Amino acid sequence: MKDIRRKRVAEILASGSALAGETVDVKGWVRTRRGNKNVQFIALNDGSTIKNLQIVLDLSRFSEEELKPVTTGSSIHVQGKLVESQGKGQSVEVQADELEIYGTASPEEYPLQKKGHSLEFLREKAHLRPRTNTFGAVLRIRHALAFAIHKFFNDKGFYYFHTPLITASDCEGAGAMFQVTTLDPENLPRTEEGKVDYSRDFFGKHASLTVSGQLEGELGATALGNIYTFGPTFRAENSNTPRHLSEFWMIEPEMAFYEIKDNMDLAEEFIKYCVSYALEHCADDIQFLNDMFDKELIERLKFVIHNDFVRLPYTEGVRILEESGRKFEFPVYWGVDLASEHERYLVEEHFKKPVILTDYPKEIKAFYMKLNDDGKTVRAMDVLFPKIGEIIGGSQREEDYDKLMGRIEELHIPMKDMWWYLDTRRFGTVPHSGFGLGFERLVLFVTGMQNIRDVIPFPRYPGNCEF
Ligand code: ATP
Ligand code: MN
Image 1 (tube, rainbow, N blue to C red):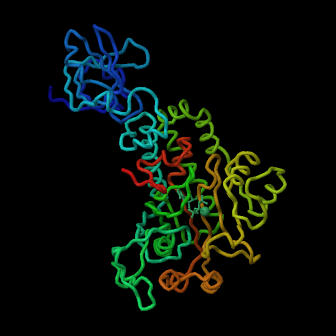
Image 2 (image 1 turned 120 degrees about the horizontal axis):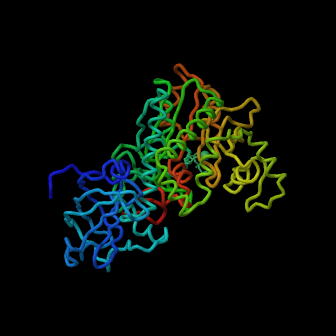
Image 3 (image 1 turned 90 degrees about the vertical axis):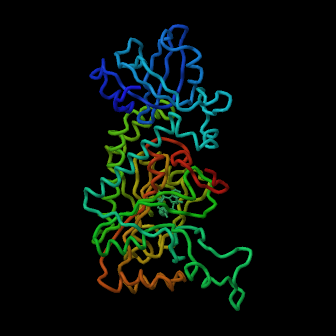
């Protein structure tokens, strides 16, 4: 092999015929090999793009014996001249001079043969599925969205604030928690009352994995002004739905001096930015998913960018649902925590637009949300999306110490480990707001995939912790 710099397939295809005539060096995995006695064609993919690079092997230079191990899934290194392609489907191709085989993939054993596989099958092969066109596309889009999120907030002067994953506050209230302990479950230390003695545990107290970084995020916002978190979140709920994971990534911006309207404006601008970014930077991958799975995907993405979100109080939303004449599986009445079918009715059938629902009954929302003057509703805002339902949950926070304590007492929330949170309201308290966006729900929306287990490399859900 000659000593020339390797090019990624994306780079070669982007340069197109400008590189024609040059000798190129490429490495990747064989998607397919086909041909006849005179010439063989390899579709080579290296993960840099959904597109394959065609390698042409003249059988006067390479023996059939030599090419035998070059099967679907094998990994190779090729050098050859880049030429304009006569075939259709590609503008350029490589006429191979040299071929090196890194690793074989036995056709009898390698599970990702040419034929299309079901997403269910691929979920059982999650260690290999990134090598498929579908997961390559999803994972590149996932990356682009993560990058867009950091870019959006950085450009706006928000600081990336790292909140802890292990927490001792049991009152975050967003969902059931996984315990973190080094105690021996076969031999637990007990207190005199017979309870587990967590004072003998690793942290000297009971600890769990976080369900939300918000409470610590508020500490950041009330010092740095505008912050966001972007990290893993864990919920031990037994929710076997296409929209829930046990381990997911959440983005939680928190802003001092933002009221609920500022919060809604930010949420809307943020989602539109992310969707636009993906459309611009992942055009090939989104087009592929559009053609393969969801013919309305691109239309839906553009629609979200170009339309204002509807903003509607919960009370009016419930009235629309009650007057819809629709028979829902779960009944609708004022005070009910809306189910996904209700949210999707409002978005997909009634308004046909994303909806931000606000001012929920305090009973169904968290203790820290700011109470409205009616004494019944809080300044919550959920952003509801077509196909997804809730994509964002947020609120203006209660900044008044006495009102916050009133809610904590009403709800009997164990606050003994939460003195630090209350200090934000004791010292220089300010109006502030924030929200949480489930990263995988955003990836679901942008990819048009149906199941949240297919938009994260290695999903965690009840009964599954493989890979
Ligand atoms: P849902 O009602 O859909 O279960 P939630 O009200 O429990 O969500 P929040 O506590 O408001 O969710 O969390 C903020 C955001 O995190 C949600 O809007 C959603 O996008 C995302 N989210 C919540 N739970 C999960 C989960 N189990 N898996 C993936 N994303 C989630
Ligand atoms: Mn919510």
